[in-house]
Length: 303
Image 1 (tube, rainbow, N blue to C red):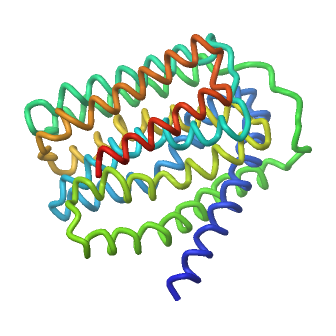
Image 2: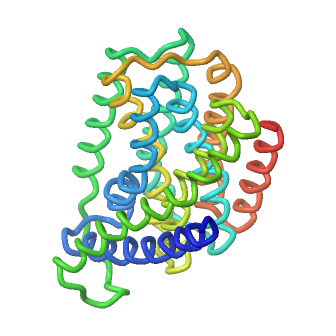
């Protein structure tokens, strides 16, 4: 039965990602929004739904190690694993002018969270500040994201069908990811692995599976802006939206290791992505290989 659920999860991830990319591309054309904006918002936030569910449930259940570790670990996995693999499959080349604002928001969100974690807790007031950051990001993205629609590459899709594919794909992605992550989490707990490490590795990668499926499929379909925007938007939403909402529900205590060990990794990956994007005009295959190697090093150090 476990193997059946595992295969079902993989199938769900594939078809969910396929529907989401097709639907989101059509929505972008209809509203004269750049694919980058759609990737940053609808796709990026939607694929972060598993992280939201896991973190809120963990905070309410009194497991702050998973609540914060899930977000920090997901942000690291999003850049090193998902963008690395996507760029290895198909180069993700985007002009720097299309990325600077959103990368700046991601860097700011990472820095703000790092500062908040130094006192050992994310308070309700800090949760409000994080949500204000999310509102500022959304306002900026939509005000500056209007453009002439790109030529259709997926055929004309009726709007009702485009929205149905977009949200239906999100639902299938979330269900598929859930099937895969549950078993791995229970196995890790059986081996006595700490909640913080589970959150940073197994749960983080598991809840990032929707981003992985979506960005890989977008890369294969040459929807580069959706592939990159999905990850950058997800990382911003993970910090501003998920931790902001979680802290508003219940203040989140933080282990010292997050500020001392894990946030330096999260900051380094965010800065590394920014440097690569500006120096190389995006992420060519060699950059993808570098990111994947860095993720392997991160997992090895986490032990």
